[in-house]
Image 1 (cartoon, helix red, strand yellow):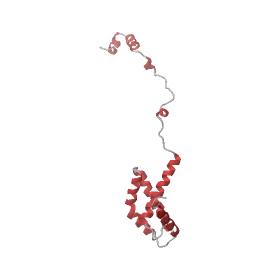
Image 2 (cartoon, helix red, strand yellow; image 1 turned 180 degrees about the horizontal axis):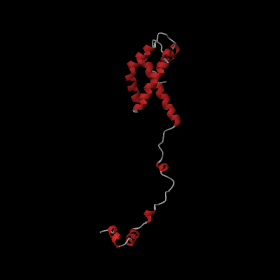
Image 3 (tube, helix red, strand yellow; image 1 turned 90 degrees about the vertical axis):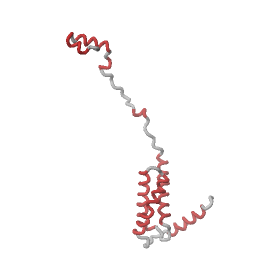
Image 4 (tube, one colour; image 1 turned 30 degrees about the horizontal axis):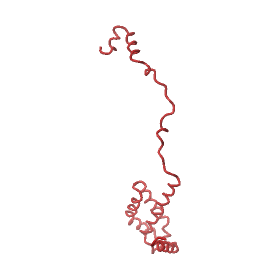
Length: 150
């Protein structure tokens, strides 16, 4: 067992056994704690991911979970620690979900190439000699305008 882990688990177990539906923890108290520690939650979330959208979503989910769980907050528990624990647990849950789903792989470029071949246009089969012969057929007056170097 790692050093200090027994203390952490015993504190967690003690806190878990003290959880109660305490009327002294009011929504105003929880909102005040969220407002006070919102910056700290963003800093901690940013340390877990550099993606700002992920950070915003994570902090928003912490606020939502804290408001839903406000009745379980024991008045003796440090609200900052409680909020950071919620953030940590949500982040771990998301990492596990991402691992279960697998890594998102972008489509291969071979899949983007059209499998059907389009027929070559008629004009692409005309050579320069064919073009000059067609200009000669126009006649002396009209053909001179289309001749190269005229």
